[in-house]
Length: 640
Image (cartoon, rainbow, N blue to C red; front, side):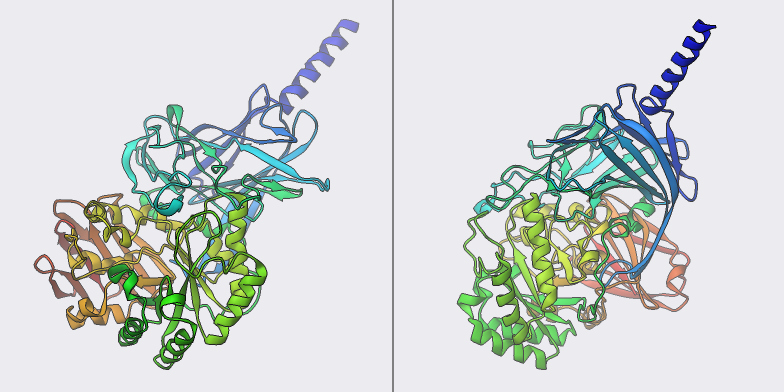
């Protein structure tokens, strides 16, 4: 009898131990049942998750965990309980690819503790378009935690294909201005291929496994976390989170996260499904922190004229800027951007005169600023005007008094916690003075445009200006532009500064004008800075100018129609009741399209396409259900 009791007790203890450590897997399914996430703990208390779609593996066994200086949440973990439910949200974006967004997901909150009994929670959201997860450290110990490593990984396997942008190394590039998310994508490479440098790969990262696609990114990075990236090496196709270079912060301030409890990490995002699911997903803003309540009606998306991209530094003078204000007014565009060195070449008194002149023309002025700081050696001014709250508020108050509508802030220093906090400090103070913001030489927005509606756009891409620097960059334009809508521009606004019809000084154009015309519609940006100058625009047909005069900068709906990353893309956007469609071919051979455009309505549509190499042609479309189109190499089209 004693032996039986002893054996029963031993079996009970063994069952309890296994339930707490090597517990039975916990699962969660998406509302439509197609996606299924599984969480499991190994016998030594390490945490793993996996994801499949309709029984096909998307992510294999992928690690989870945090390693803090003070606590180890990477192994010896015990599962205490799981709490399942649902979450939903309805929100409005002041600028973006969709105006009114609805989010619905199944949820699982996992309560764990480490070997020392310290609590940790994992939160999983599974919606029809993908998986999101984050860590939550409960309690309030009054102390400070220091994150050394996040173990989150994404096991794509070696059979996957990847579209990835390399991370630039800190303190490299012109005047030590990297990292700036300005590298060309490595397209359709084998998963697990090493990055060119130890800096790794940036978010978002696109993968294909069989017929399924995954877009991996992050959102809701608060001011107590850094921006992260994927590590440079991915053995067996297993990509892990990597932290910023120690040089990617403000001197004397934190690079890696420092925080006190209660605390939660950013969301890790895995949009998953068809290419249409990926391109139309709003996960990047669905889980971002909502904007504070208040009056945001002064935030107005729009198009802008901009002299610098083709005319460079010598154009930042009063006479030229006045002409570009007239140009914006003639095109019915809302803004004119005056770029670097305006304080020295034009002066604040003359800027006041330009602002008054622009206001009478119905055009708002945007002014450039240097973010630095000691993190780069760029010579452009104004610089060092935004470093402290006192300086920012003094500067912003003066701009508001002049009627300036927004600022472009350039040359940031990386993804460290202190630098990420600096972005938010600028946005918060700018909002107090009703100034819209554009970040250049900058990191990925990571959903900040929902938290701060005055953030209308961010560069974080190798944009049009690079095509004006070197011929090899211009030659890359067709395939590069056909890649971006599937990756960088899916979740976040992007200031690519598109569209040139005329000549680029010292550069041979690689794209047709029809390709260029499609870009301002294809790329989403709260303020769309147009690269073409007044002379090039004047040479375009009147029907092209009419199209550009009516092009919105904010959309109610975006629909993926057709395409493949790096080859071609067809995208439609709706503003009110009007649909507009853009198509580009990034290949060196003709792409034939067979499109059903009945969703655009039964009214007659107008097609603008290529004539000869640099000319336009147009025709009417009446049968919208079956539209056949041949896009020549590096050509495009718009339908409206």
